[in-house]
Image 1 (cartoon, each protein chain N blue to C red):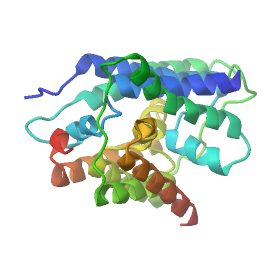
Image 2: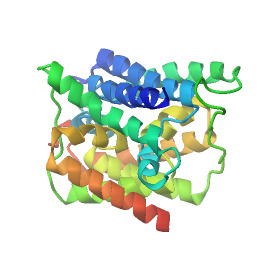
Image 3: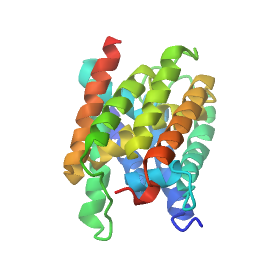
Image 4: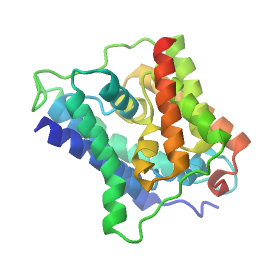
Length: 133
Length: 141
């Protein structure tokens, strides 16, 4: 059950990225590049995702535990520290350079694109490095 | 102006992303942060099963669409130094900042976390800055 739910969650998320075209770095750069052809689509993707997730999240607070597990694992760290902000700057710079954030890059792996595979390999290396810092 | 704007598919796709994140929370009590789940699928033996299943789901979405919907296609970047640098930056950045567009941008803001809201504002600004300065926007590839 847990495995099926996790699979469906990932599946639904990438189907959403595909339907909204966020899997296409062009579409993301159309939002991040401010210019005459600015494309606000990404903002609507986030707004719609929040409109579905946030009410469900707050309704879930009436429950003691999720359906399949003993407890909710909400992040406990609330600190806005240098690690968070430096990380966000570096992530944003990488995101805006090519138009890939982790989800769409992983989703696009099955295209077989050498550039996408290279990006994900470098991202994995970056994750490894971040654990050493 | 705004000839690339696709409001309906953006809203529909966004709702699907939100629904995917919501079922992970309601059923497993987990935040659907793609960078965190993928990393831990390979580094944390505990809970590897559901994390690998989630990543498998991520990989299958576009595969299903390309197999069953002939009109579906999407661009990928051109191989170049940008791809290498961007991959490293996205990896180090989401590793240090404990999250990406899904974990901070959707789940975090959805939970009204100030930490996630701060991260999202910062990575959005950095993204806009570099994309506006260094890319041609939608015409890059």
